Length: 232
Image 1 (cartoon, rainbow, N blue to C red):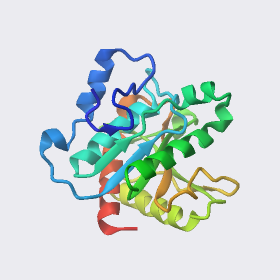
Image 2 (cartoon, helix red, strand yellow):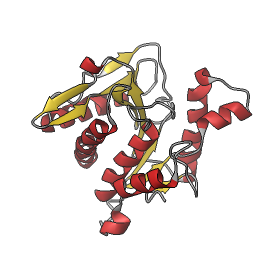
Image 3 (spheres, rainbow, N blue to C red):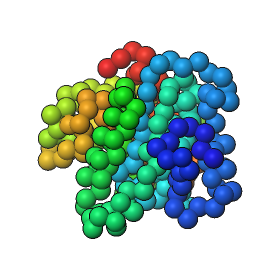
Image 4 (cartoon, rainbow, N blue to C red):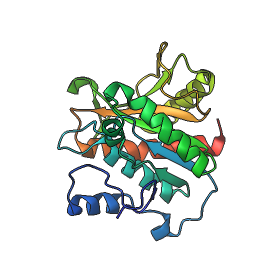
């Protein structure tokens, strides 16, 4: 029932969700197929290395990926959501939570081959910080704070830093304070060496409501659209 293209024919965005919740996700992620938005010819891949990271109320980063994908599809992008179950793959192959970047690496490479590459790949996560550091109120709305994270040990650190910094500025230009400063973790890789267009974003924390996350992703999608139009 997910309208955007996924890597599975019958995706289960949140393990254990019922059909009604899937319908809610589907309506949130209505796409250019409904809107008849012309394609701009650019492709974006969205995945979640840590698929079971939850927000208040039980929604996960996979649900957040659906929302972001829906916004981008409406702007003319072909978006592919990764909906293979990474945790199930770990269980089947004797891997642990610490091996999840190895698992996401496998599916990332599969997607790059199967779809002929992407203009941008987004690994969407959730942070784990106290409530005071996880939201901002602008006008009458509260937004989940987001942050770009760069792998300092990646061979593509320059391109990841450029994309992350540019996107941060473009989002904050619209709603100042939604994006935190870009963080670089020197000893990390985050699969960013696989492709120059791979970035990692943390949106909200376990203290954020899903409504706050949705508010932020709407603005983030505007920033991504500007980034893609101007180039990186």
